[in-house]
Length: 343
Image 1 (cartoon, helix red, strand yellow):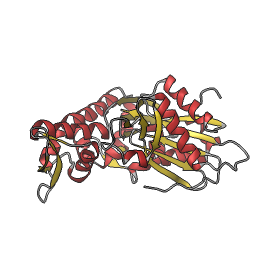
Image 2 (spheres, helix red, strand yellow):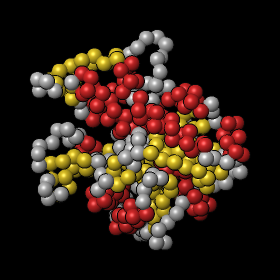
Image 3 (cartoon, helix red, strand yellow):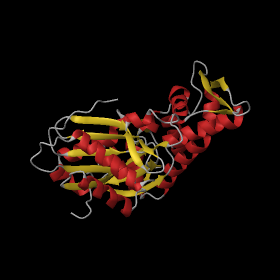
Image 4 (cartoon, one colour):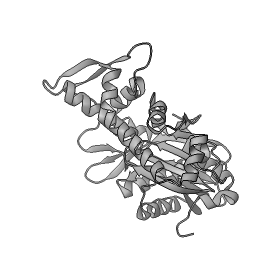
C-alpha cells in the first residue's frame, strides 16, 4: 500500500477501479493507491471510512455498518458514494495551497454510461478540478504498455480488471473494435467462493477467495506438481470454524466459467476486426494488462484458443495508470485520445 503525499502539481490522473483506485501526480508519479471501498453507517448512509481503513472492515462490520464497493463489475453501483470516494481521494493528495485548480484525467471502463461519466466529471469538478478529461481504460492500458497506438497498424489489448474485461483493437489513435464483459478478478473470486461453498460446505470471505486465486490460481497444470493451500472458513453444516486443504486443480475447475467468458469475448472481438488489422495482430501479438493478467497460464490459454502470440505487459497492475500518466504529461499532444464532457 502506498502512503499518500501532497501533490506538487495541480494536474492529476485517476484510475478509478472496481478493486483499487490509483492517483497519479504529474511531478511525483503514483501518489496514492487505495482500495475502492467505503464504510457507511446504516440507515443514514453517513460515510465512516474510505480506502484502506474501509477495506479492513470487509466481513467484520456490525449490523449498523456496511463496508461496500461503490463500483461493481466495472460500473458505478452507488453514484453518491462513488462521488464522495472520488472527492476524498482527490482532496487527500491535492494541496490546498494551489493557486490554480488542477486538470484531471480519469480512466473509465468501456461499459460506463454517459450518465455515469457525467457523474464522475461532476464529482471531480466539485473536488476542485478545473478541467476533467476521460479516457477509456483499454486505450490507457495500451498506452501504458507501450503499444504503437498512433501508427496505422493494428494492436490489441485485453485489460482484465477487478470488475470488467475490456478488449480493444486500436489503430491510428482510436479504438476500431471493442467489447467488454462484466467479468474480471472479482468474478473469479466469487467463482472460487461458490465452488468451495457448493463442494465443501465451507463459507469463506471475499479476501480469502482473492488470496486463494493469487496463491494457487492457474489455467492449466504446472510442471513440478500441484500446489495446495489450507483454507479456513465457517462450516455451513455446523456453523463452526473449519479448515480444509484445497488443491490447484480444484481452483482451476472453479475458474472454468469466468475464464471461458474471457476467451469468448476476445474471440468475438477478433471476429469483427477488419482483416488488415487482424494480419497486424497476428504479426505483433496480443497484450494482457490488469490484475487478471497475472493469473498463471492465462497468456498460454488465450494463445492456444486464438492462435495468436500473447504477452503480459511488464507492469500489468499499473498499466492503466501509467497510460493515464503519459496522457497527463503530454495532454496538449494526446488530448485526441480523451474526451471531455461540458468543456
